[in-house]
Length: 105
Image 1 (cartoon, one colour):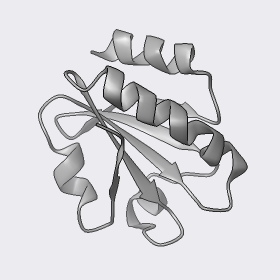
Image 2 (tube, rainbow, N blue to C red):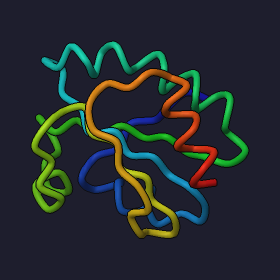
Image 3 (cartoon, rainbow, N blue to C red):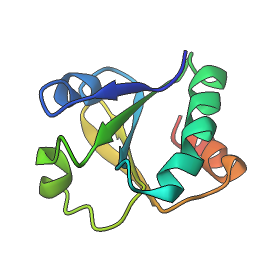
Image 4 (cartoon, rainbow, N blue to C red):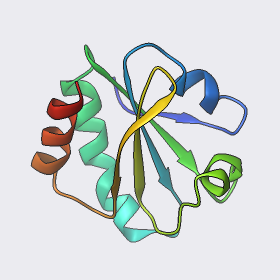
């Protein structure tokens, strides 16, 4: 399963789920976000039994990114049961993200 997309209206339901959820804050004009897309899709498929990945476009849905004071993109927030348990900012290689997933799972 690839990473899904959420909006301001649906993100709270996604992060409130039981288990680990990664929310990527991105924008269409962000080249690093575009580079990260296939990596997140791969990680979503490879870790579907223990992680859900969703993407939130800050251009069209900015409520949560404003609350969290997201200053640079891409920004990834890891949630467990609605609570932030980790963050990663900027483009990072797949092994680095997998390591973060492994540590937080």
